Image 1 (cartoon, one colour):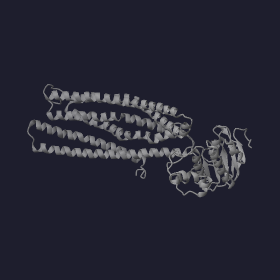
Image 2: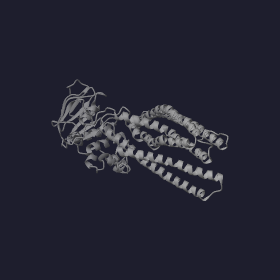
Image 3: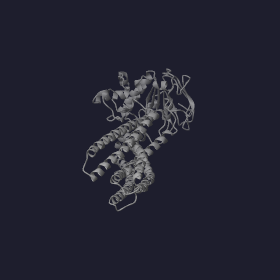
Image 4: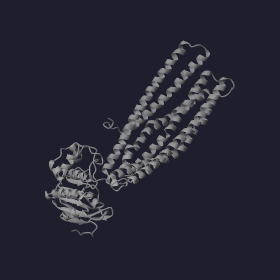
Length: 545
């Protein structure tokens, strides 16, 4: 609901200020209730209850209802503003990451997912509790201080002495809290990255019998996170203890002075004479609420520390200099079947050989690990920006204007299969019905027959239940679904048994035989031998066979 009605930054700040001001207004009702209650108690001390005294509790109750309604409205407005702000921050993370071509230095998918899902939730209590508590702490103690000063300079001195000590100690504790929260948030991101990496290689760990080592690694990482979390909690408990000490001392001193003054033992501290019963009771009722906003602020102090750690990390992520993924132009050119020409291409301190790929060609890109085979395919797909040089498509430069049109006409088969937590059909055709020719080309008939609900079987994010060969065939079917004229395949036969690898090779060659252009990054000698051309990246520039 909130996502469908986005609010501007001005509207968000207005909502947050309105919620905080309503919280202050609710707090200002208590001095009125306290005055009414003090008058009733003072009248009862002097004489039996009269009609006004009996009616006064009704006024007290009415003020309590008004105060509760204002407080509920404040919380509702703040909660809605917090929902919208967190949703906006999450949308910003997803939108920006979808336009960038390199991983963040703050972590991989796990750390970014933790920032968007778990860490941003630390902003909610900061908006719901800390901000209104800070506003109340800036207003209510001053109001109560001057009300106390009106009746007794002695009580005002006590409040003035005890009150400012609390923010001073909170500031001292807050420095440690912020550092502890920042370390905790780093551990949360690291643990999330570790989880994603280990899940991606879970089948390999099971094959090599490394399960115990993985478990030990998780145990060490979780113990480290637990230590960071306990450090934050220790700081939070310390701040609460300091606050309770000073507030208890302040309230006790007010109670002692009021009690002895009403007994006639103390003759000083009130303006112009002895302290009246109504004034004494009123001061006793006000004293705890003088410290209450400060107590609320201290209780929310660790919320502020956690939120500031997250917001600082978010700000550092925003200012990180990473290249944008190519695309966003308005050109709608039909580049299917275009001749591809690579000239003077440089990327990440590596120069690639010039080459021409005509429609219907099939070529293998080979080289040692780290020689840039995957990077070359990503450059050809418009997923990375070259540092220098050009990729021409029928004499049209591959740039922002044509990148999206170009990508719409190619098939992409990445080295590591990735799936959405949706049906197999959706993972291939993204909602469209599956073409039987694509099923035949990817040799998926056996896979579909083995699944409990066929192409409607729901896959996990990691393709749970699929073997490596089955996952690759589904990835191939996805690449072929849009009837591309160019297929880019990154290590399509890696980690497959011989029979499955042969089936994948036959499918790729069938695509090429039907007139498609095939470019493959591979180490597989069988696949290399069956393609028309070979581009060797670790050979001297210009050499190809």
